[in-house]
Length: 290
Length: 273
Picture 1 (cartoon, rainbow over the protein chains, first blue to last red):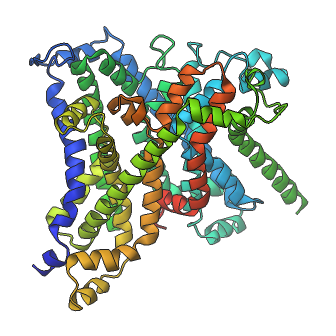
Picture 2: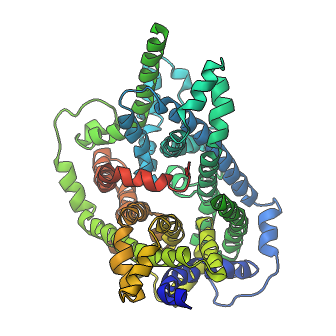
Picture 3: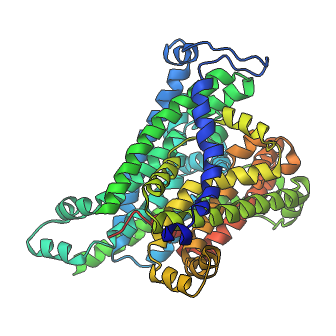
């Protein structure tokens, strides 16, 4: 009883209230609304069963493409950011002059709003005046110039590239902090035993870095599935639907007043991510008990 | 030895190249924000022929930047204060008193780290609470979405404050409020600063929520108004660049001042050794 007095229950109420009212309840209510014809043109809402989900998953519409793009974006950014971040962290970890300067520079894009990054890259990737094509022309690689954001084959890759440009430094910082907790002795002992550089990385560094790598993968996974700003600013889903992801699709449904289908699309993501979240939280709980 | 130092030179040069790739687009914007309209139309790395600082005053006036700057400060500032205080109180109780219910509540809040917003039903909820197109509404919403992450970070740090202090304070006659606000909260200051900066940055950079929930331009934060400005002045890259510089300046300054706290916070929990 004393604990209840020193650590009163009502201390936790404010945070819980905001979280439940604005995140949990709308999410759960969304599950119900995704079985209705809810829209902006009429005030009546009718139960229509699983029609919205049929519309999404039947393959007659472009929705499956949104889901596919979201998954491609997520997997591609996880792999690229982790690989580049890890590589940079290794480079910065030891024997580099001005390490802190580089770390500050490489991390900088992470704090700039994605929206701003998008606007900047609309200029950088411009086919005629953009910095990238200009650079390619200057070094004589004119054949590599592209219409980065309007070419069907390149638009989505460009978005992924911009996102990696912004996010790799952040991953590097986390992995760098992880690297610095690994005692030097391990590495030195292995070196004396004659293990080569890459073999030491693979057999000593990587296994010891697994917790930090897990965190970066989870962060990128949660971010990737929810991506909106980057796509919205750079291509707004175009050309056609080539770069449309779940949340840009949701925004379009919202603008068109098709709330039922939009909610079903949101709910698909809500259920998937909450289940992923459940396993992540369980995993974090286990880690803590170690 | 000489092979090693040659490797060091290559490595340093290589890292410089990567750093250059990262800063080049940012430098490009700063350079072009100082050009006149015709020189900026090619968006090149050439230096400005004359320094046009007047671009900034033009943007401040045409983009109504004071207004959106104030909105951003208000939304990010107020929501972060609200969120940090509530999150610290909750994290404190969850960490100190690990009853079944509290453990469940903590895990339940952590689920929010993954939960995406459903903008349709959220709109309906906000309408019922009269929080749509309202500055108070966006502040409360920003605070709510930052809660899971803030509770998560602060929970870890509360564990670092010795529990004996609570007992000593209680014996000296502190009630729970005084105990928390005059003894525990001040001791949590470094982690509070970390969480504050991170939540502030996230809120400052937020674009989607105002897009959905704020209709009137006079309520827009800087991110939304710079996007709108871009729509209107696409042809004047010098002005767009100037607007981008002014919008990014606060976060870049905050980053340079609070770098240590930001990196601490972002790596907290991920590397426990």
